[in-house]
Length: 134
Image: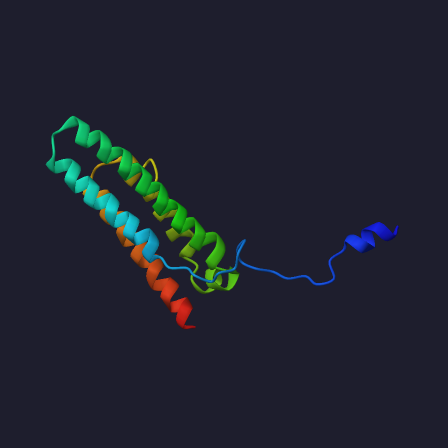
């Protein structure tokens, strides 16, 4: 009976991520999304099949990075009080990650799709910076 007592932590702490660095910024997602848009534009302007194949591969990698950076913000930075104050936040993240995914920028070479993704990231960014100032 003493073993469970010995294994019980004496101090309980909580953190919002595995290593609470506190460094979050939607700019990481925006930069990758800008890269996606630039690649789409270059793809449209170039008919070389090898170039286009490389462009698609790189664009898909960048789109995955957009999703990663958005998920980190969504799951690690934003807390219940943020979602209470900004009830549209879950929807924005859902829409943005879908725009970065296979049904959006990852699966498209249309610069307009990348523009829609950038617009969602900008909406998230505005809320992010409001929470940083609070």
